[in-house]
Image (cartoon, rainbow, N blue to C red):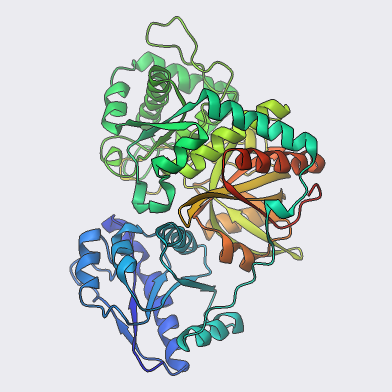
Length: 532
């Protein structure tokens, strides 16, 4: 390649995160630059290190537009990610870039670089922007270098997508097809409301479903405001909040508190989270929402503690009871109110359908999204670290509430604190899925996985190299390797739900695929499935 390669690094909007994560990003960039130069390429960094801010990230959409004005549109472009990034900071430049684009992430759990790259990939897929993608622990392995050589030569990167089968090529058992289609038809005909507390969290363009694609499924959006949620929290009494905390204490949930609100989880933060829990249920009831998503990160993060305690509790059937404002009616009594973290509407549609289908099948309906955070070999198999940034339903954890811990969210992301809903996911059989937008169509990938229990010391090690305050799931995907998952997955998030056993999970996978098909989605099965 005779042209120089331009390199850009997209980052967070939060200065504290960008500063803390910069050393890891710098190391990764240097390794990628060295690899390109070893293959005869020349690299020009598209923007400078900022001495005042003490990092070299693109840290806003405004800054991104400034940067792309100076990058030749025909130039080969590499986006290197070792951290979480806000895709909209540079999506505008990638929309109109005419040269080849390569997204690269380090294979590390230290900061969510893999998560950030997958979000950017999903956003580019939705936008119809052509790109190639690579990942590596040290950018010296042959998979990385061989594909980098191909990309520098103007050839496509070689990825293995042999694990992906269109649903039309699979045999869906009649009973599963009937069960799934019935739930989907009911949703489409009776319709449902998805409550969105401010959309577009952290630049997740891929997490917004255009209305014209979502409406045919029967799900319509209620655009709510986080300021309304904050106002409703102020109407919740201290006694109501204390009752929620007391219920959780009685269930055996552990809150790891301390005296310093800047670094510790405090009792006051917990009570404010309990007020948000009550307020969110009342607003959902008022507007008739069947599912809700709270953005939290922008705006609300400057007003009150994190929303994670709320999110984990809402997704659990067994949770603190809440009355309406008049005190006459228990809201969503004995049922989850499916919540989708970070207002990921793709996860919201998936979570609502899953909840209703699992109820019809007689299975526990608790489901949640996780980040595809990291993974390593253990005991002869590749074990993923699925780790959402704050909360999963306690029913997913070993020990239930007794195995659930709430710890203060990291200060660099969460200035006002607030507790997570943390635990180790119980061993068992799950169905995983992802709804995404590709080529102007609503699509869904589904597969099977087994959650395994690792020794305590291995779990603690994995927590220590990722984010120890967050819930963790040790998952082995069936028939999908690490590299196949990374090559295909069009999102930072993955939806998971348990089934009673392997046969039930296979049946439920088929039923869920049929339900998505009935709603008009383009469905693919990824990896092994005994029922199809």
